[in-house]
Structure formats: structure tokens, C-alpha cells
Length: 238
Image 1 (cartoon, helix red, strand yellow):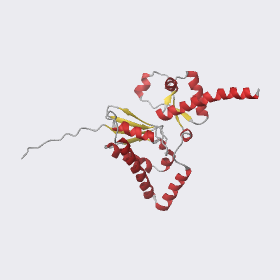
Image 2 (cartoon, helix red, strand yellow):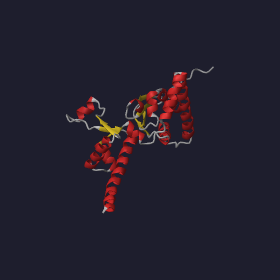
Image 3 (cartoon, rainbow, N blue to C red):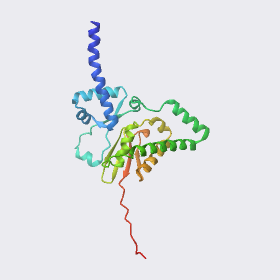
Image 4 (cartoon, rainbow, N blue to C red):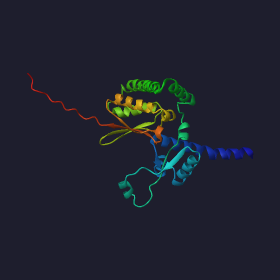
């Protein structure tokens, strides 16, 4: 009897665990999303998606908030409240194998205490330079149909940042849905600053960091403006 009972419990728990892992990863890789969007993406019934989301929120893996919407978007929905979006918490991110640990954070704090903030900036710049060198090498043989922004996103995804690119009329938006060093960067923003500078050098244009996971945003977002064609004028030849 005991074996039969244990088997039934396993059969009930394992599918739930796998589904919740898929659900959490969908938010990690795709960013904040509503229950309806997640249900459609993963082919889960409305009742099922709500049950799994409630469980992940209760475990502290996910949290929910009102979506950021413009007044026009709110008007288009009528008077009803906008659907909440679900996003990953710091605890949730920790379950996806951060590459940092307490020792790294303690080491940087010690370096800052002993040698000042310049030493942290030097470390951040060296890390960014390493990212730049490896990204440049990885992107060298990119497909001709792949944009530079997309190639960078692919490299960053391989590095654990779960990156994607959205193209708009004025430029691309690079989103990093996961940050392996978010907790460290939260205390040492030089890491984010140097990383942004490396993106500018890799892409050959000025970029603007709009949001970071380290500062509490759902994703790290970087705006990459379209390169304007530089018009050259030719003067009269002698």
C-alpha cells in the first residue's frame, strides 16, 4: 500500500514540477508576461496556468505587478483593470545558476575598501574588455542575414544572459532577461556601466541602457539606434 501511495504522489508532483520549470524559464527568457500570454505560449489551460503561477508566487520564484502602459493603451482596454504581468524575483534567478557567489562579492568589497573605487572601475573595464574580445570573435563569422544586434544577442545568450532583440522604427532594443551577476552589479554599478560601453564598441554606435535587473527592473534593456547614413560632399577638384 505504501508503495502505491508513493507512486501516485510522484506521478502527481513530477508533471507539476516540470510544468512550473517550463513556466519559470519562459518568463526568464521572454520577460514579464500575463497569465493569458503564458497559457497560449505553453498550451496550458487558464485554470492550470493560474494554479502554477500562484504556486510559483507562493514559493517566491515569481512576483506580479501592474504592467507599464500608456494612457492610450489603457483607454483602448476600456475601464477594466489591465492584466497583471508576472516576472522573475531575485530568488527565482538564483535557481537558474548564477555565476557569482558570496566570495566574489566579498572580494570586491575588500578591494574597494583597500584600494578605492578606481580599482573596481578597473576590474569592471577588464571584464567588459574580455566580453568585447570574445563577442567580436564569436560574431566574426555571423550569417549575412543576421544583424549585428542579433549576433550580439546570440553571443550573450550563450553567456547565460537569455538575450533577445526587438527591432523598431528608430532602432533595436536589446533585452537581457537574465543577468548572472545581478547581485554584484546591484552594489557595484560600474559593472553595468562598463558592459554598456563595451556594447557601444562592439556595435560601433552609441547605445543607451534603459533598465537593468540589478536596479530592480524585470530585464536589462539597451537601446541601439539605427545608424544614420553619413552624407559626404565632394568639393571641386583642382
